[in-house]
Image (cartoon, rainbow, N blue to C red; front, side, top):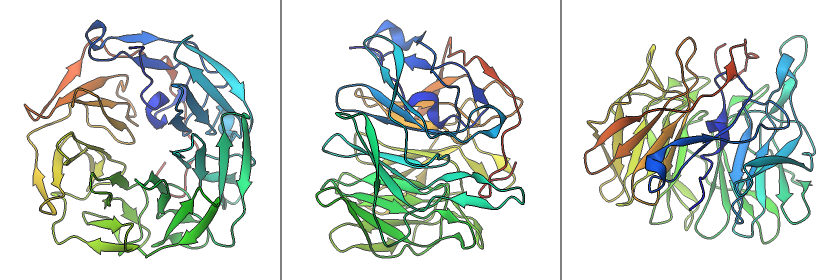
Length: 357
């Protein structure tokens, strides 16, 4: 099994990233890291999506001097190299990407930067990447789609659920949309109970989507969660809440159907704690698992052997080039050593209207 990229650079919110790393399969080389070729363009706050043929699409983000990128490139795990592909119809950062069942990739939301007064150019729209043609095309829509830091989750039936987002002039929105790849159209669906950004949206084994945590323009940090039922098109607010409010955390569905939620920002601090959601009971319970490094804006990736890989962080002043492995049987994280070497240059990042600088 070839080393697999873990959503390249884990949404790279830490600094200007100059190199990319791949994590070997746990069954190969004891889960060691191996450096791969550099991206053609340094980028952070970008999007990434695995393609059916094993390649990874890396798209948009911010380059040096705060330049918002419309370019995209493909990582080939067979060669360990990146190659340029077509550019998006508009530059974006803080967008979401979702792989469709037909192999195309849906890109939604994000921002194209800001003017001299700090007014964000929110992109409340979507576009599609066709890997056979290597091109992007805009999706026509009469409604606003997502916004900055919205989530996009591919449902079991192939549609994509877009939840929340921040839109210039509106703040955080309590809206959701569905993308239908059969007609390449967006439509409104039931509204979430809370306006959210920097939340998680996890597909459950029964087809529902768990939307948890985040923050709101008016309500601050959220500990609430709700589930979306694609059969009824409605959100249900859960009576059970997370043990602590979290934003910019990560979530992954475990092999037994439960969802692991870890890290993020809590009230006044970065979090290393974890908890688990049981869809059978609709409740959260505390986990004994504690991250070795308190992480925000990172990834949890479920591996074929049932363990969960944790990588990356927006961890200013602390070396974030570390990775950990969660073992559900032990309910514990263990630090992978040696970890990745990110070759990152610490530089000030542009301010975002959805996150503190």
